[in-house]
Length: 84
Image (cartoon, rainbow, N blue to C red; front, top):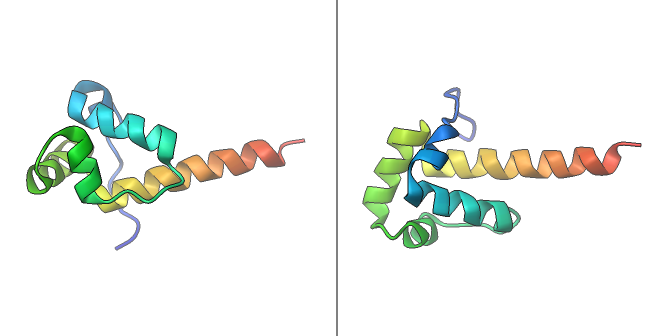
């Protein structure tokens, strides 16, 4: 399933430092694909533990969260370019 009906808990990125590290990477590199392995490495966790932590605290799986975040960033970028 590409889109999740569950909302993303964005506050989790501020509360958990390991998730904040990954969010900061997303902020800078949202145009590049990022794997679960890479995100777990940035967070300093094993893939399985990072995946469970992400789903538990953010509210969606890593792939859905990554896709939603990248789509949102690209949409914001497009809307600022289109504005007169």
